[in-house]
Image (cartoon, rainbow, N blue to C red; front, side, top):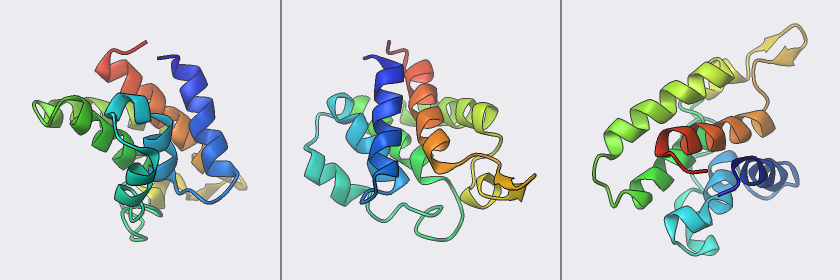
Length: 130
């Protein structure tokens, strides 16, 4: 897996419209999950704007943790989810959409396109894929 290529694809999918952050990372990582693109879009459809528009956990983070669950067949996924969340927070500055979108100095802490990139990078780091 070419992490930066997949990260750029996820950002492109998000920014061209039609996909939310969870969908963008899920679709970009479809080879990791083994699932069809349409199924991934449906599964991750409700996880935008911080867990279903509640401004909670970032959809990009949810999408990569879902992928980790599929990749591990649900075995040990909690450990991977914790590591992915920690790596994502380290690079993005927060894990909730509310905090990530908080405007400081005229811009959000972490724009969506950067969140999806950071989520892919965190996934690759913790799942030890290249």
